[in-house]
Image (cartoon, rainbow, N blue to C red; front, side):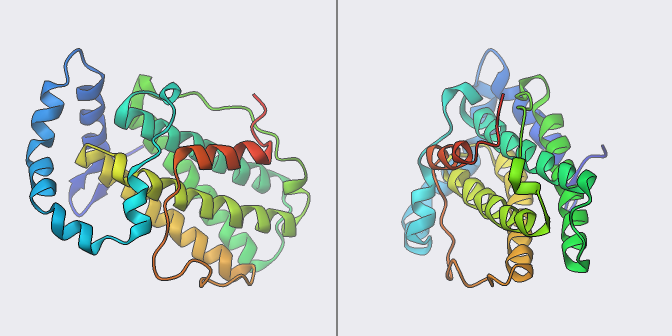
Amino acid sequence: MENLKLDNVDVDGAVREAADAVSGDTRLSFLRKGAVAGGAALSGGAILSALIPAGAMAAGKGAPPASFGKGDIGILNFALTLEYLERAFYNEATSKGIVKSKLGKKFLTTTTRDERAHVAFLQKGLGKAAVKQPKFDFGAALKDETSFLDTAYVLENTGVHAYLGQAGNIKHPAYLLAAASIVTIEARHSGAIAMITGKGIDQVGSFDTGLPASAILKAVAGTKFIVG
């Protein structure tokens, strides 16, 4: 996969560099790289607290369990697990050929491509630190197009809440940029599926809300999609 670039910034390379720093014997180089950004955030703390919505402020809590890894590595592995889920869901929907409508097919084609790219991107960035893909069983969620669209609506909104919920926990700017480059796409998926299903895009309000990892993992467990 070619390196992902945003406005001439090599995000993929930056993620790999950050992963090397975090996974080494010392965190000194990691702290040095984050010193400038950290100082800027502290000096502007009062201003930021006045500007950031309450829901977004709450997003800086509820990091993933230690089983996903330490710090930023754990957060990206948490994100990778959710991307595994979405990729498997869209791959299976594609192979079953259950989506017949024009808009549904366009949505499925786009999301299948995007979720495959997200998984590949995170796997490459995390390298050997990447968690393995769980086994999935989507059962009745893929029995027909209606069940697919309803489930896709839930999954895409869950993804947005999950990424936003970890935004305040990410320490390294490269990881934050990587996550931001994905969550904006997830949000576009969410808006698209909302329009296709007739749910509209006015369900959230003017500001979105991040959810802690515990709430996301509980919701995912409740679907019983992960079977091993």
